[in-house]
Length: 381
View 1 (cartoon, rainbow, N blue to C red):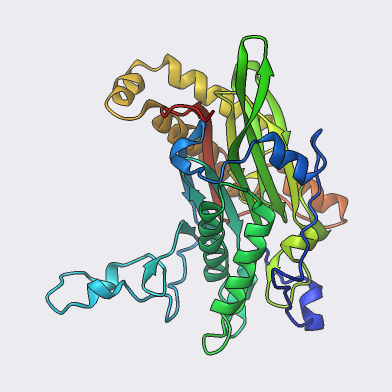
View 2: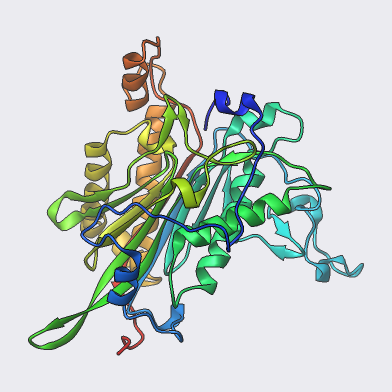
């Protein structure tokens, strides 16, 4: 992600966080709904709600490119589950690439210094600040993955009353505790995620359900909502910066916290909209119109390819399509990132800042693609 650490960290501001009694999360809304209480009532929150009975779901695909091999996680985050410690077990520790926390697998995947997560109701990308690797005790990949792990757990445990900023705040606080003494690992990360939800609306024909996205962002990773059948962008989250090449971020010595700085956008979507969660490895190398065209072209090519369709019939067609969409977008971003003579958004912005920069920006590239579908289970009443 960043090649240099932001100057704010040189001030050695002490990392602090508020507990749940002290922190009143204030979200910034860019939808017609401005009050979180109104959002909650509009969704008709059900205390018995679980991911199995949400009326809508994601089918997802992931594509990753790491500019260099991820660093191994340090102890104690490299320890396998206790069941693997059986001397008769043939588990090979040297081949393990997963992270662990208290003997359990960490949720998500690591991509260089990035972390990604995808399931049927929540997608997210965290972009760790790679420059921490040059400092003693620094580990950006660990920080981005821990925040992702705890965030996904918090989301899962609070589906009946979704508050993704509060969930991110709790994840941030748990990450601080997990990396404190005696572990003492430092790092920072951006965070962006989209939670699938719904609201009930009254129509002449009766009650109808409409899919909603709760989109949280802190930093310069982004969520984009596309509508391929109309070849257009429905929504894009706003990047947050302190200054050029220094986004807002969570972690060691950073003054940013989810409660204070994260934004929440509540976005009505439609079935078959495609939602992207991407690191800046995509948006620094592809302009918005290129991303939209790439997604639309991928969907059309998928529909027109008989061989792809035959393969998809053997599996989940929507999930296969999303893997194809994510992979095509990742490859397009990688082509620019590795071309020293290409024009790119990163180069354009650098020139505006008076810097002599040419070509794409070589970075970790993380893409999660998700399509909105109606759940196979009955809708909630």
